[in-house]
Image: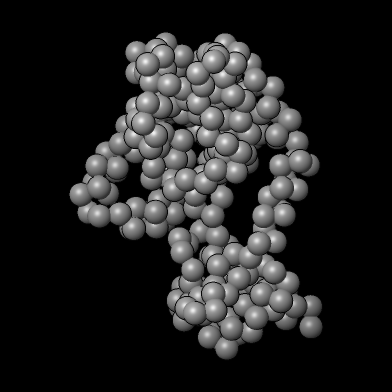
Length: 243
């Protein structure tokens, strides 16, 4: 009996992880085939998870995605997990030393989400906004996370892009792995530039990125390069604290 219960729980966890790591809503057949779980069992588990708010089913497509309950879980993590208290003072210090906006972006559901932000005190400043969600293939923060993901997860993100764009991005990711930082100017938002580096957690897995951003007239490639060593020193210190 205990083995059966354990097996059921493990399968449910596999489904939740699959929905978390795979872009877009998924149908029963695709989930079943990828996880090697029979369609009837997959459907039964999804029905149970839906009842508890752990998965959401679109009425028209009948496909499934993670449920809104995970937003509550994420909020709980933001307030309770110790690593936030480790990161926050470092972000404030980085903001004060660079005089630009500093944010911490976490990897969640194959996107990046701004979970902490300390806005520049200067009159003209950059504000991304806590809760802002951006695809991993866009911007410096997304790319530094994407560059250090496992090959499988990275391939999933790249698969949605046109072939030419995929080739260009792969080259950028190789450079990021070597340099351990990424720079962009006006890529997502006009007149805004950013410098980002990854944060690693348990077992050396990438969990997010720290980004310093500001108006391009003041925060550009030349000025950002002067602060690369400071950013890398900060991210390395935080990552060591989280290992």
